[in-house]
Length: 177
Image (cartoon, rainbow, N blue to C red):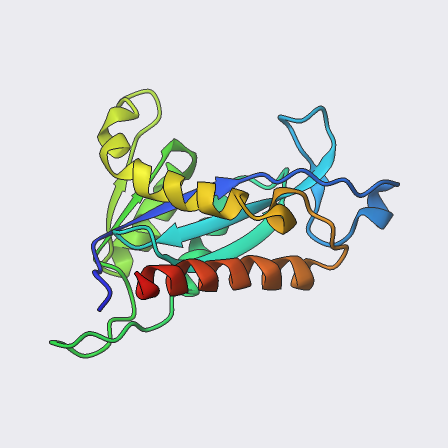
């Protein structure tokens, strides 16, 4: 049974060893602002309370985090519960300051999702930090896979497939414990 507690939302930037001009680097890549402009991708992830990934997506390294939140939340599959019917959306969503925008807060509120997003310039990261370790641990599990540490695939669909496969393996390992 999956515990639908506070979900966490985070991203990670794998490096891209693909060489060449912008056209030859593959789909969904962009100049990485923290890696001297090298082309790369971001992995966006939503996990449930215990750190199991429930929604994953990729984008170019230069795409802002806030642009990935809505597709990630829409991509959450219905989750079966033993006591209640399937839930199609989380009850609460924790996110860091990269997702602090009025339109995202309104979008989440319209769907009945309680948001816990640290506000820029007002709150410290400590408020979200209590729940952040679960998403950081899941990102570390993703980074442990060599195929995701560097992006070798030119097609975005292939990279997303490998990312989804690793998320499935994480869920399987938790089930096998």
